[in-house]
Image (cartoon, rainbow, N blue to C red):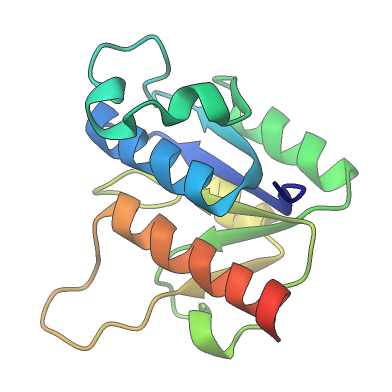
Length: 157
């Protein structure tokens, strides 16, 4: 097995334990460094996470810390670029963005998105282009799309 990709994922105020479980599974599949569960995000041993994680919790390095800013500041001190995934007036198209490592990707609340305090301290903000009528995707789906694009860039470019 190869070393973990220099990517960290930070989940901030994710409400659904099923989304968290699906993200655990995606983080395991992409072999990221660490998954951080912050704010109100459910964390193991929550009883709904295993339903979608399907055993991935045992293979993912994860840390629970309610204090999102403490986590992000720690990651910044380790030279991680803080990249929030959110649609804003200044966000950059995921497929036009040149990802550097190490990076920490922030995914926010399913309805409210990434907290404004986090957006302010982010090095960059990226969005997934939308072509239909809806303005967003499920957070677990978004996490998979972004992680695989970063890995495509790091591994195959």
